[in-house]
Length: 83
Image 1: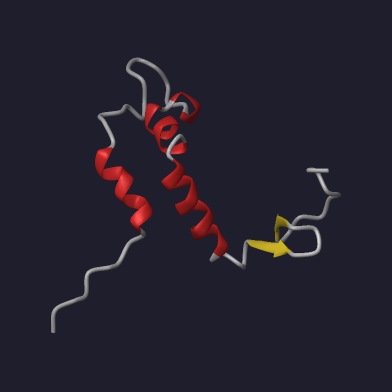
Image 2: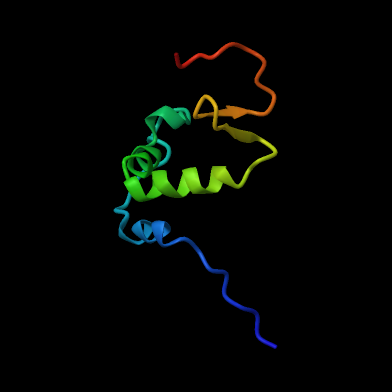
């Protein structure tokens, strides 16, 4: 029986239009803050939506507090930083 093709989010289709981008700059140490690839990815609304959708499924890492309307890490012990 043939395997089913894994269904991926339509939000990832934007990756098909990505231009050639460097992840590491020539003659420099690797620095993710200087990655053209990461900059492009984070500028795409579809990728941002995909990341949020993915994170919503990680309830062993993040939870949504409907009282405060905030997302928070399950091990967070501090005060509210965004207020």
